[in-house]
Amino acid sequence: MGRTPLAISLLVCSLALQSAAAERVTRTRWSFSLGPSAILLSNVAHGDLAGVSAPAGTGRGGSAHLGFEVTSHFAMRLAIHSARHGISGPGTGGTASAAVDFVGIQKYGAVAPFLFGRVGKHAFVLSDARTTASGPLRDHSWNGHLLGGGAGVRMYLTRRLSVAPEVSLCWVRYNKVMSTDGTGTQLPLDPISGTTGSASLLMSIHW
Image (cartoon, rainbow, N blue to C red; front, side):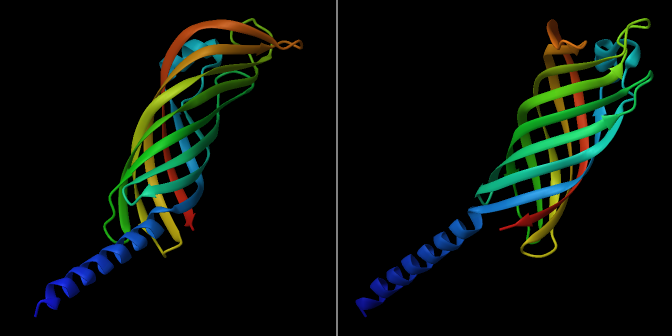
């Protein structure tokens, strides 16, 4: 009879160790995501940057993420986005960003809603475009920092495959401009702030 509590204790410890081992397997999981994205620029701020060649607003492009699940409720990922934007004058416009996301996850079986914070770099580019009505056609790029976040829902199709719609909204502060006139001159720029948003549909593989 005196051995029963000891046996129960050993059983509980064994189950706890098995649970911890299973949790570690779940937590150390990598993922790679790829899919189409729509990138929205705030017209007022980006119009100020581009002058008469203001972007049309929404650009179409793609996103790629490389993620690592640190715990069952927290992950980190590298997020890369790019899109092409129509502009009102000659030339083309584009955006690109690279950021680190800090992701909070809540799993309900095959469905896992998540929230994330984002910090990184953002670039807005005009190619063969004018920034004044009478200016020459040149390439221009504005580079700065972005800070924001977003939300999404991951739906597991299998243990290794999932699909996730997500949206984000970020604040951008541009602090450097490059104007290429054949010699590649880098010019200072007074800090200008704007916002950028995205909507993506990502297919992911997990391992």
